[in-house]
Image (cartoon, chains in turn blue, brown, cyan, green):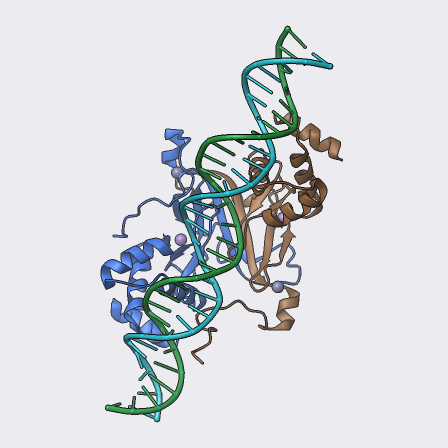
Amino acid sequence: MIDTFETQLREHGLSVTAQRLTLLQTISDYPHITADQATEIARKQLGSISRQSVYDTLNMLVEKGLARRIQPFNSPALFEDRVGDNHHHLVCRNCGAVEDVDCAVGYRPCLQASDDNNFVIDEAEVTYWGLCPKCQSKNSKSRKSTPQTRKAKS
Amino acid sequence: MIDTFETQLREHGLSVTAQRLTLLQTISDYPHITADQATEIARKQLGSISRQSVYDTLNMLVEKGLARRIQPFNSPALFEDRVGDNHHHLVCRNCGAVEDVDCAVGYRPCLQASDDNNFVIDEAEVTYWGLCPKCQSKNSKSRKSTPQTRKAKS
DNA sequence: ATCAAAATTTGGACAATGTCCATAATTTTG
DNA sequence: CAAAATTATGGACATTGTCCAAATTTTGAT
Ligand SMILES: [Mn+2]
Ligand SMILES: [Mn+2]
Ligand SMILES: [Zn+2]
Ligand SMILES: [Zn+2]
């Protein structure tokens, strides 16, 4: 799988470095991860990596279309490797949990704004706000930020 | 008009203070304003107001449904007084300009997620990303720095 | 109008997230 | 392998926002 990552990097004219390969693996394993969490995980692989490299790499991956960045209120940016399918996100107002949700209407329907004000639109980001099942029952008044610990994708 | 603001505050069980009246006026005058910009403007009215009061007040107005907060990537939170109509936003990737755009399909259509994962959804935030007319013509002169655009050592 | 309780405001410290910059190290090119 | 290009590093710095305890203002009841 790391091999595919190398190919992806080369196809985009990017140097192949251990840092980039590791971060590609990381966002593949942990969807909706913060830069900080990615740093922590990458460090277990690499021994060390600078914070700046993590930001540079994640930003660059987004730029190249190899990763996607979402930014819910009250949360640092989250990164994921699921790109190109224009999917959306459910975000819990209480605990910050994030879930993927497929586009409601079909292929990139949201790119049709009612009036584009002469903007050239390339993406529609949809965030559904609410309460996750756990926070509905717990009725918990607690917590505000700090994305919770995440489990790796199986 | 300040009178209406006073009524609004009382109806929500809130004390009426010069700071709150001024900020209500401010977000009415300047849609999509940052907390910092609001502070600057409010200070011209009031002489002084603490940063904390501005945040407290704006957050509280959002909480009470008297204001709305949007948070585009790479931008501080923006506040506006246009609430309850589920309108959306165009954001320029280059200069950050924000424009209102009415809901494409009708009344709160976006609250219909294809699969709600058992979340209780109360809002759908839609952000259309692209380039504003000005930035389309100006080309990439004022682009923000990315790993790719950073200068090599001199 | 006056007073005490409740609510709000203030300022300074602090936290979180992210970028800038110069230099060092690594990777790619030839 | 050496030169050139690219990338990584770390430390300073900027921005945005919150925490906290003391001071002030507002409210509600005499
Ligand atoms: Mn996702
Ligand atoms: Mn708006
Ligand atoms: Zn939750
Ligand atoms: Zn623009």
